[in-house]
Image (cartoon, rainbow, N blue to C red; front, side):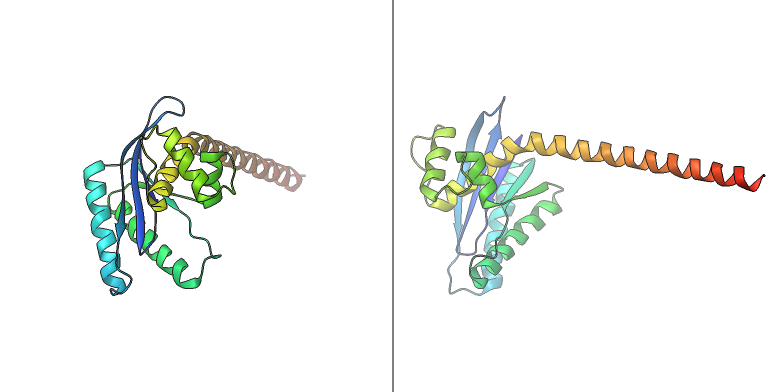
Length: 194
């Protein structure tokens, strides 16, 4: 599975692509950070991110995109910009019929380091080790984008099993409800014929 990991942001937007192998094997294919000047109009900044993401999607053809879920504990302007950048990326994926999954920072940290409260240095160190990189990815947005892709590769099988189990449970619930309705109808007909 080829996963594009995205650490969304207006000033710095981390992009990565990794390929998953057997088990937990993952290979980094590319990583970069798209930068937009803070003084430029918002629409131009979003367009620059959109253009870069379009290029990445066309070049790398990922099977899925993993985007960091925005949290409101940031200041409102930062959260808004991050959400807008993430929305532009999700839209680009939707136009290509590519699945998009959102992961919280704590999910990513837990997947990569084993600790949902790990700091950026710990995440960067583990990303470097997991991907057997010669040097640490910089800036942190690049490491975070790689961590998101790794997280999704490792969580995807579980997410798939959970979705299948939920579908099976829903089907069983539908069958059970149909059986109850049939029994109720039969009981009502039995009472009315007496």
